[in-house]
Image (cartoon, rainbow, N blue to C red; front, side, top):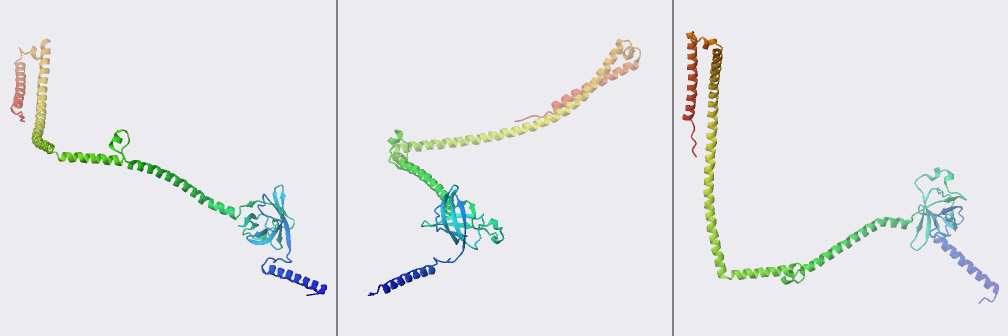
Length: 348
């Protein structure tokens, strides 16, 4: 079409330049080229592990992209990452670092800055051009997610263990139920096997059959009826005996009450008689003492007895004492006769 090679080459170059310009326009439109002409500062962070970070891995501050990793290399302490950050973004050296991994394998380095006023910090506390800082990395989002679900997983595991234990228990229960429902005769039970539902039902059937045979035996029913009649008569005799015994017990109780009253009366009269006897004995004792004194004086040839023969007054005094002694003895005899006459008779 174009026989002139100059025109052909010119058009080819123009088409290529148009394609490059269109590609750049698309990159700008889709946000892939947003930092043309932007200035950056670089510093190095040494971490225990890069964990998938490499050149072009994004660097974010509180979730906002502020730069990228330009170099990742092995260091004695782990991995050395060289970062480039846009000018104007201030990052404290004590920021918390974490490596966030996406679902398709890409990773980014996240700086978490607290609520402190970054502008008020000392410049030496901020990352700057050429800084080299050794830091530690906290868990990623997935690590935190794994930690958050670890406790529910542990509870789920514990629940599964309990379910397994419950299943074992129910299995054993099912085995025992099967044993209870297994067909088993009375002969099997007598041979040593434990009784179950089937053998118990068989035993009940045998008992019912035996009762049915008994109900159909007229002679046996008549014998049982006669036995029950005699038992009723015996119970009547026993009831009468108990009534008689109760009446006898009431009589004995009444007699005991009378005996108790009589004993109280005897105690009262005995106390009175004892007091009178004591008084009488005192008189007797006084008379005996006086008589002993008289005898002692007579033995010495003096006193009343010594002068009894010569002194009529003393004789009269002795006569009077004898009369008093006789009176005392008479009173004592009267008291004894009174006790005999007024004694309480006990009748049962």
